[in-house]
Amino acid sequence: MKATYQIAEKRIQICSIYEQVHHYCREYRCQGEPDFTVTTTMADIDYERKKALRNDFLEGHLLQERQSAYLEELAVYRKIAEKMPEYDTFLFHGSSVAVDGQGYLFTAKSGTGKSTHTRLWRKLLGDRAVMVNDDKPLIRVGHDCVTVFGTPYNGKHRLGNNIAVPLKAICLLERSAENHIRSIAPEEAYPMLLQQSYRPKDRTALAATLTLIDRLMGQVAFWKLGCNMDPSAAAIAFQFMSEGKRGTVC
Image (cartoon, rainbow, N blue to C red):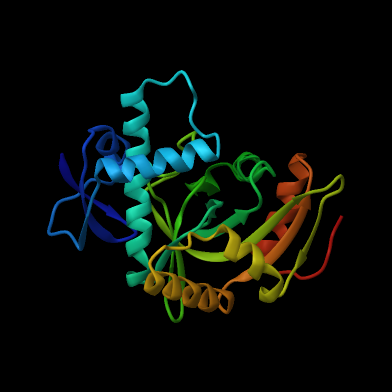
């Protein structure tokens, strides 16, 4: 099965075993000559299965074919992520929301509340806030601009849109009884950036990714937000991140 999709402004031809991946990516379908092609095999699916079983991702009651179709979705995106550094783009694990055409990206360890926090932004700001991607956006790092892209891989709740916006700030979330935010130096953000970025197996692609992260650090603002799940956390975060204020507020 074969079709072409435009993701992060690149036309990608996907050649798959199962149809499910094409249904999953349907909102990104396009025409035209592809920039590159990804082709999956049963070996790719078996690799994802072993990885998922190690991390206890698969539910035991799923039928084998259903498992394989789902795992092929992961295999396709892994192949895309391996190729994207050639185009100054890399995959990042986080939840991104756009407000008034500017992108804000929240990242943290799993279970911290990234999706919950961006939901609070949407509740606070209404139609001004649009989800870009709730799980695995792509980030393109130019020499004078950074862009965050929606992708089909937007989390279990499928929160995201086929849009691209300039990335204004990245915020590291952590749980806290009281809400407080402070600007941080890129060096403080670096360990989390490295952890949350997809690191290709290919050495050349990995080196390119590390270069992109270095360039990213010089072009966007970084913040650390200690937050609870109260709506005031969103109000504080938006006020400081959008206005570029520095310091701490509780």
